[in-house]
Length: 187
Ligand SMILES: CCCCCCCCCCCCCC(=O)SCCNC(=O)CCNC(=O)[C@H](O)C(C)(C)COP(=O)(O)OP(=O)(O)OC[C@H]1O[C@@H](n2cnc3c(N)ncnc32)[C@H](O)[C@@H]1OP(=O)(O)O
Image 1 (cartoon, rainbow, N blue to C red):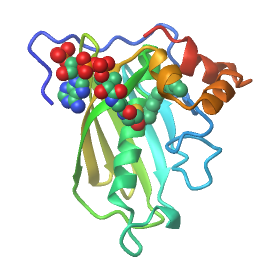
Image 2: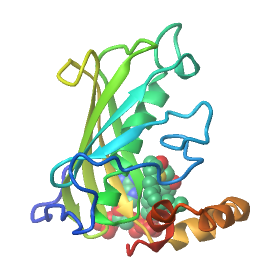
Image 3: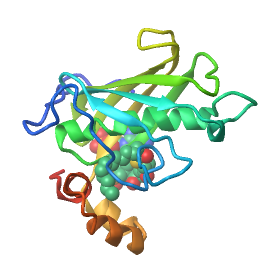
């Protein structure tokens, strides 16, 4: 996932949340960040400098694969969600086209995974990102890392393909910021 020569750097939107500010969830029912998913990751991302975020994910017993260890797919999801949240710093709607994960160390249940993600390049609709997840503290060893290619999409990606009842409920969301993230961002 190497950006082509001449790909541009990421541009932080002037109205992006300030560094240190929590991004909040883009959708209450999102498995990655929504508060309305009992077994979801409840991942909380925070804006960094430039187009970068940090996030935390606490591995709970419902996230196991092997006994006492986080499921690899769940860890990929945490990385994916963290990289996906970078879109809000650029006020861009984007979806994952390709995701590559390296599982470097096992991640025990009870771990607080410290995630960090950034955009490395933008080439038209293609947004190149990378992320790491550390255990044992913010400066602890890397347990997982990923690179992903996100593709910018129009809101019609969701309205045309999503199930009507969830789309209608999300459009009626009284949380204005969350609604803006989902439907009022110019891709
Ligand atoms: C409710 C709303 C919420 C929104 C708010 C925040 C959301 C946050 C969500 C966070 C949750 C976490 C995130 C989630 O979980 S997002 C959910 C998981 N992802 C999806 O469901 C995406 C499904 N895929 C698609 O819909 C289409 O394939 C997309 C839209 C991605 C592209 O189809 P489209 O027809 O539009 O475009 P295109 O095919 O002309 O491709 C365009 C360019 O991209 C290149 N390319 C494409 N794919 C790949 C690939 N695999 N490897 C390498 N390159 C690839 C392609 O070659 C081309 O390049 P070029 O030829 O121009 O050089």
